[in-house]
Length: 337
Ligand SMILES: Nc1ncnc2c1ncn2[C@@H]1O[C@H](COP(=O)(O)OP(=O)(O)OP(=O)(O)O)[C@@H](O)[C@H]1O
Image (cartoon, rainbow, N blue to C red):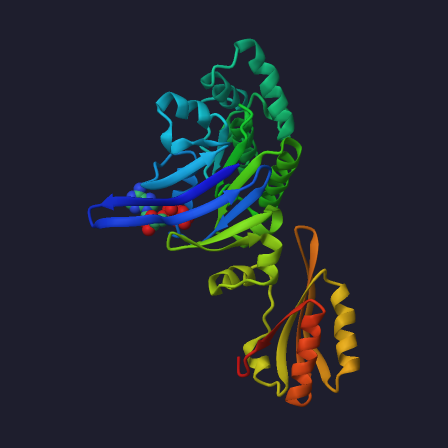
């Protein structure tokens, strides 16, 4: 649905050239929820703004639904943009207009016949759960309700793509969750492709199918959210994951152990417990559990255990190989850490 090819965005400032996005290529499928995570300054906003050409890429292309947006003229681009909705951290509602008029505004701007507007606005209000707020002004709404209006407005012209720019960053955790659930619901009902940028890994964990991690303008890791949580490759990705899934045993405790410390992950959660008990039965080693949890990512369980294994080093190595042969992801934690 969206192909980003070798996209670079640089800015010319008083102090020289700044690279916002550095040669990024991504392929986002129809109906996918794709998350882009990174710290402040990583280039997420620059990238998402290049997807609807709010920012013009310095080089590279952005193909949405088969059309290369960088090649369109003004009129063609305005038309193509109607198929790309966007919501923002600070909502950007028009404060002098009612909820109804904020949404109707987007329909009028797209040339919707006046007689269809009211039915469409009612439909959208129902979709976002705000039918009873139709005639109130933004100042009378909570943050979550304002974002619901933002979502209704973004969906007004039946876009194929919804871009979310830190859409939940100004909201408290419960409201965040309700907005994420609404987005997921809309994604499933309308098969709309959603691209969201965030610095919060819990957002990605909650609703995204696939994700990319950005650092210094580049994509440093990309894949299925579940696979990345199970086996992150880059230190930065591990850091983001540790903010929502705690695998870590306190350092002072780790120093007290004399055996081999291992982190064992099982895709599929509960199944892993039998692998561990088989291992302890079949090899001359002893195991102490220091941490055990089953996390649900995209409704799929991921079993995470941290263990101390005691035995001869060859017995421990054989046991680790055995666990790996039964699909565990095993990582030895260096001693003294
Ligand atoms: N209009 C601009 N002019 C000059 N430099 C810019 C501009 N927009 C972004 N940059 C620079 O591009 C880099 C990437 O910024 P960007 O805003 O895309 O990152 P981000 O990951 O979205 O961070 P944040 O969440 O803080 O917005 C930064 O070094 C930033 O200073």
